[in-house]
Image (cartoon, rainbow, N blue to C red):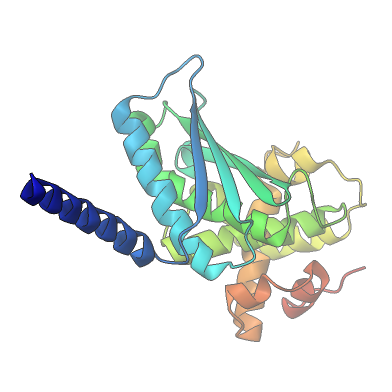
Length: 252
């Protein structure tokens, strides 16, 4: 009886020690994440949940090391849509700040080749990098630190686009810019502060151009990086006006 008790206590002690050591071994940079899957018209399979969770956790851990100003807790809500958004890898999203937490909504298209899993593997990391950059910089739907204006939007979206492209190595068609992108930036700088956001940033312009703010923003951030030799992390700490000046544009 004494032997059994002694052995049992020793095993319990070793188990607790192992748990304690495993806890201490966790990296300090690991983010605090809440990942919720929203089932409605479409429901996630266990495999889809596994792939999505893995991409979000891996991406968020790495981003936390790059952007230490992120909220302590980030709440992801993920849902399935059937809209074709192939030009952004089958994934879109948006972010909101609710101090001290951040919220990110992610939508994965089941119309993407390979379905939800295909979209998660093609575009989810880019979307997570993009939206977590918005959270760190304060370019969010709620708790926004910036005023109105398409130029401001182009700079902030451009920063998130380039940040995601640099650190994931993936470029999405919807963020690409044409040879005439310089004229797009100049055009944006002449717009009034209350110019239509959907027309100039995240929608379709009457002349057929799409996502002008994202594409022009990508171009001007690349130009600022090239002319200043600063990093994307250094640019991310600067004002829109300072970034535009680095890129060679005069703010009216």
